[in-house]
Length: 86
Image (cartoon, rainbow, N blue to C red; front, side):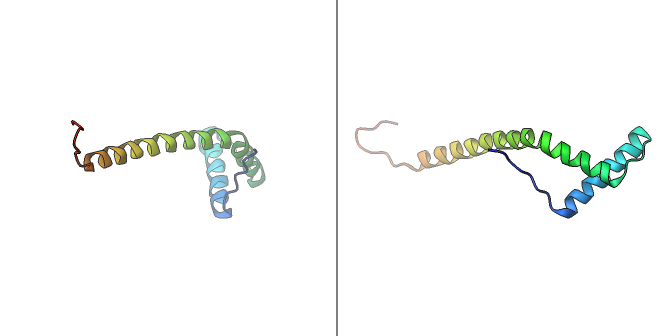
């Protein structure tokens, strides 16, 4: 399955400006809007799946932690029954 990441126009425009500012400040180079947009598109295409997968892995950990907390809380709510020692 290929994941296509589409950014809202405003966010992409902001990223393009950020790339242009980076090149100007860090490399003392001027990069045009088209070149910056192409770089942003390449980075999204190449880095996007790695970032997406890392985010999913982080969410899995968080969900498991929350599930374990809920499980502990539910266990604490259980009432003792005969024949069952706690």
